[in-house]
Each structure stands twice: as structure tokens, then as C-alpha cells.
Length: 175
Image (cartoon, rainbow, N blue to C red; front, side):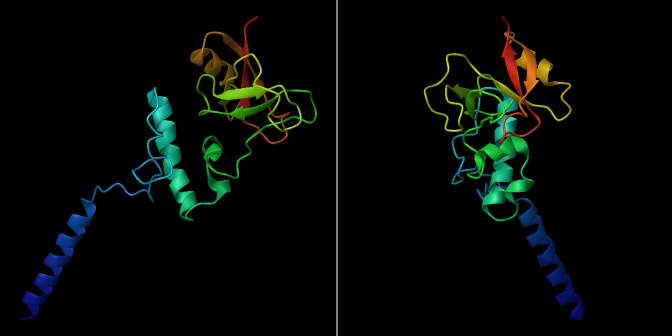
């Protein structure tokens, strides 16, 4: 009799485990891109690379929103999605235009430059396009710029922007 009870319990346990492993329910607590998540409807971009960025960052954002991750633990490329990220990047050491990210890093025209130089991102959008890429070592930034658009032929580290990550680079236009 004891064997039958142990056998039935083992069978029930195995069946429950199998059913749990087969659960493919999309839970917005696991990825903010899923239905009901804060990024619902915002994760389908024109390119595979942008899609990968959105869905990857959706996972980090959901972890942050549900207390499983801190803002500091998010990859730099995903921090734009949280409220703590600066909305306007500025330089106090150079008279550079303020800028704001309006798209994913490493994508065409992902930032807007403003005529202001005081961190307000005001005074109207500057007349030229802006492209910001990330590169931890600094060796691939120019190649990324050129690969995204042929009009960008160089890159400049934007560490002189007081509140921008040190691994961001501004792509520069040809003359």
C-alpha cells in the first residue's frame, strides 16, 4: 500500500513539473514588451537589431519594475527606458548643444540636438541629425557610425557631456 501511495505521489509530481515546464504564457512581469507590460506595442522595430534591443531591454525593464533589479544593474543601452535616466544631456565644459535620445542606441537619427547649452533641451531642435552609438572599447564606434549611415565617417567620445555615459560616441557627418 505504501508503494502505491509513493508511486501516485511521484506520478502527480512529475505531471505537475511537466505541465509547468510547458507553460508559455506571456507574463508582463517577465518582459515589459508582453501584453499588459509598459512597453506593449513598442517593441516591434524596423530592423532585427532594434527588435533585439527592445525585447532585451524589455526583460531588464520588467525586472526593474518588479523589484528584481536596480536601476544601476540595467545595461547602459536600456537605462533610457527608466524614469531615472536623464532626459537631456548637457556639457558644462564645452558650449555643445544639449541632446536627448529619441530612439535606441546604434540606430539612425536616435537623438535630437537642441540649440540650448544649459541642460534644458530647449530653443528648438538643431537643423542637423544626430546619431549616438555605444562602444565600450572605443575601437568600433566609427565603424558603427559608417555602417548605420554612409554620411557618418567619424566618431567622437561624448564624455565631455556631464551626464552621458562614457561609452557613448557621437557620429560626425562628412563635410
